[in-house]
Length: 310
Image (cartoon, rainbow, N blue to C red; front, side):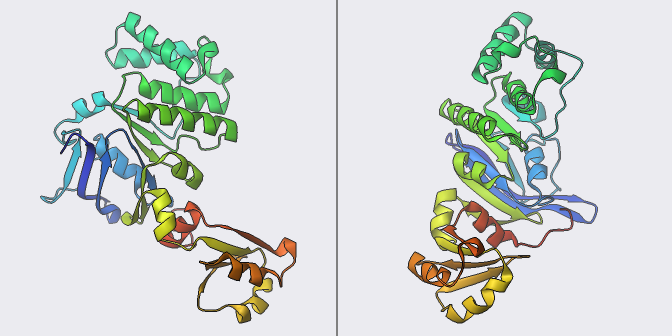
């Protein structure tokens, strides 16, 4: 693996009994970039990330390659963990302890000396705008503060690889934007970031590359902005009531692609003028004409029906 590549995965598989959680997945991650895993619940995103730091082991196969900074998780688990910081989706902070106590305990588990650990803790609390909460009890913190604290904890050992599982779920826009800005700063500082998220805007904002997974398999991969250029039409007319589509269908030509959702109909086209003409037959509360986004690509790749695990 060359110096510019942090992670290489080839033909990774992971089964749990008859369930194929990850199915022949291959990808690579450049150093100091953010790589995003997108997919419905149960698509295999978290399982794949766990295989990178040996929390889950891949199925045995001679064709499988998992290389993390030149290390194999099956042989070099401890070395990879020493290079990595993990911010899980679940909040596992000790609510009976203070912020500084939680971080000191984790630093001790990382083998850090108290003097050096306290300096690093203060630096990271300031970085995540939590400097005033050093002595606060965990139960006193808001949801956004707790998520930022979990990221602080993941950064204590100055990792080369930061693994984030749904880092901003349930957070308000201000906190989400703050975390995005901090992650951009980490990338500029040379940290490689792996991200799972259900927020398509989050993936678009901070991921340099994404892989869209469904039922354990890769269905699409690329830079988010480039995917918008190559994988979907640029405009969509979204009808908020299916009844309004009956008359419109007679106005549609072959240049417009139609998709149906539970209570909506979506017309995708390359020409905004065509969709604009179609909308003239509708009242303003019946439609929404907009540019397509990463969520449209996600739904095109994975479908609009719910998987069994959702």
